[in-house]
Structures are given as structure tokens and as C-alpha cells.
Length: 411
Image (cartoon, rainbow, N blue to C red; front, side, top):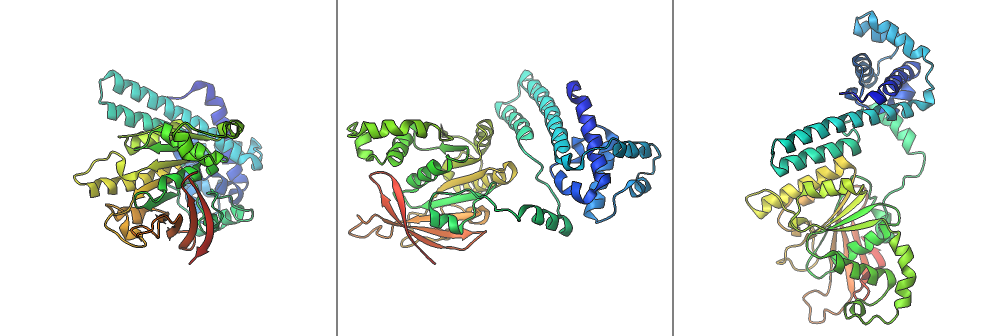
């Protein structure tokens, strides 16, 4: 089904893209990576683009003669000549591609809406309807992920992107940011034994990240109200005990922070009993760039054992991060039986977490189990880091205001 109001613009954009490829394929093709043949509404443009992709990956020349030799249909000659004669502006090829992609997404959304309506009218199970709705939303929000690169295309992309500074997602802990390069689509796991401060750490990270990115915190254990108590304590440096006992001594300080705090791009979702599919759908609805999940093992999943369920959850979160280009930060408990400084083998219930994660951070209380456990020192261990080095960062934890402060890095 075609959206008639977009038909003319879509065909013009499709013609312009083909024209740009014929003018300079080496310039145009790297800028068309998000386009797929099925995004073209006209079969003849779809066939030409498919052939251009194939030629480009094989490092073959792309021009009217080489294309006609493969197409073997004289009708295409007029189409190719007209595409060039339309005089598309080569530097606008990405804009033409964007028009095609947006029209394609609208068309798929309309088809998905009709399919969802049929399921609802037919009395389909709620899970089936939810899956159809999620698929429709992802079709609108996502970009092409199944891209194949050859050496030449990879090198061209390298030159186009690496000559200017890359902006990564920062945590607000400077030493951590120096050694981990957290990016869109990464799956980050933060592990720790009970009462080490994992939730406090993720709330502090969220308060920093929300200045620059849309972030959604999915709490499967603690209510949003309690989390905001802790966030405001951290943000305003107000003792949490004063907030909990309703004995705040400096309301003026909290009031002065209200305007700036309210501009943070963060949301908290009470998500007890949710599945990965529900989390993914809500993240898409809220247009999240980063999500934090507290805790991974509390997500509802299929499986005969806890090991199997956690394995499935980790795989699903990793897949969601890659496909949706979401940064996923998930908290995980460490085995209670473990003693001393933890490592990745202490991640609870599943070795799949160790395999899937791009970055694994382990929060450790060195004085845990000792007679004097009043020491506020913590170690933030970078146990896995695909893009950098491992090591440990010494932190001071001020539990009264739910904040961590960096001391030093050790390797």
C-alpha cells in the first residue's frame, strides 16, 4: 500500500539517488548505508539500486554501460539517462536518501497498523498484539543494521568519521571516562554484592547523563518515589536521613535546584514483573537514548531454571542494545558466597552476561565482612572493557548524600 501524498516526492528522491550514484558512486554510496532495496517503491529503481550495491561491494565500475550489461533490458536505459539528466545535486544525496527512508517507514507503519488492527479484531492474544505493536514502532525508529562492509567501504567510512573528535557517553566519573568509551548500542553491566551502593552509583550516573541524553530508569525493585528521594539527596547534597525523616534543614537549597533538576532528560518507570519486550517498547515510546535496568535478574523471562532465564535476558538485552542503538546499563547481583575482591566469574546465575557485555564494572567494598566495616572506600573494578584497558578506580562513598567521589586509578 502506498501513501499517495508521498508518492511524487518519493519517486523524485529515488530518481535523484540513482542519478547521484551514476554521477559519483564513490562519493554517494558510503552516504546511502541506511538504505535498503526494499525502501524503494518503484521496482525499476529498486533493481538498479540492488545492482549498484553489488557492484560497489565488488569494487566494480558503476555507470550506464556496466549496469545495462547486467540489466539486459533496453527499458532501463531511458530510466538511467533520465536520472542523470534530472541534474540531482550530488552533495544532497543524503537528503534524498532520508526522504526515501522516511516514506518507507511510513508505509511500513501503515501496513503494521492494519495488521495490528486485524489481530485485535480477531481476538489475538495480548502478547501477540504487543509483539506486532513493538515491531511496528521499531520499524519507524530503527535504522538498517544488517550492513555488510568491504575493505574499501570501511576505509572510506573511517576517513569520513575519524578526522573529527568522537563524542562518547560520559559518566561524570572522569577516570572512568578516560578508560571506557561507552557508545550508543553498548551493553554495560554493573555488578556488586548487596549494599555496596550499585543503585546509588547508577542514579549518580543518570543525573550526569541526563544533562545530555534522554535516559529512562527501569526499576524492578524500588519505587520511583524512593529513587527520587535518593536522587534529590545526591543532587542537592542533602542528607538522605533528613529527607526520609521529613526533617530537611535547608529547603532553600532544594528549592533553588528545582528549576535545573526539572530540565534533566530523565524518566523513572516502575517496571516490576516486566519483560524485555515491554522495556523495549516503553524505551521506544519515550525515545530513550540510554536505559538503566535495576536489576537484570528480576526481568520476567521464559526458561526452566533461573540460569536459563538470566541467560535469555542477557541475550535479549544485548540484542536490543545493538538493534535499537540504545545504551543499556543493567545492574546484576554477585554471588553471595563469593569473598574478597570479585571478578566476572562471580556474576550471578549466568556466564552469558560475561560473554554479552561490552563493559563490566564491579563495585566492591574492601572492608566487607571485616570487624570494622565503617570504611567508606569502594573499588570500581573495570573487569571487562572491549574498547580500552581494565583496572580499578578507588572511590569514596558518602552514603549520607548517596554520592561517589574518585580517588585514584590502579591497574
